[in-house]
Length: 199
Image (cartoon, rainbow, N blue to C red; front, side, top):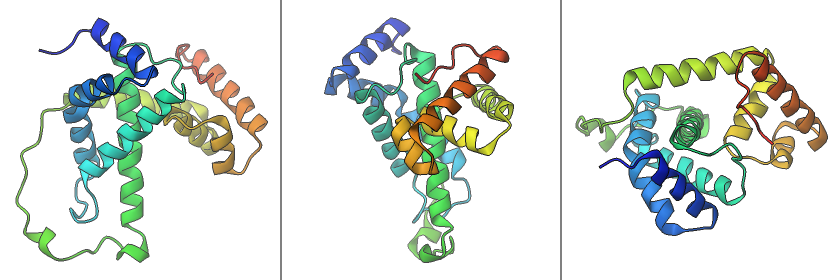
């Protein structure tokens, strides 16, 4: 039986205190949905290089790290939780695909036993309507920023990176990142997304 929003709220509270059982409950509840997102994102990628299980593990580790570091202040309920897990999974899959295409890894042209693998059954995941809605909402929010650096900062913050870590990634001062996050918040509030807060 699927847990209700109240039980997820309890899991989130327990996660913040480092409760391993709560982490396992969230993992079990959302694993299939995360795998479905990763599988969809990695369509056409070589199975020896691109593996949805690796993507999900990386995404979930980033989630747990972010929760322990209190990087998701707006994480309050099932919808917030899934939005974060979805974003982290998408980004981890995108990073894996990017890495796959690098020359040092054969440019994605990996041959061998992977060519003989059979077709796997797709685990139940988010409905197509859920995915479309989340993707459209994310695309709309990012497009509203109108600037690639602002988009990079917003995505990094949603992945759980601290302001200092983001500053290091983009080569800017932490105070600049803080100002840009303020601009992102103001932009999203102006289009009716007042709940988007990276404080």
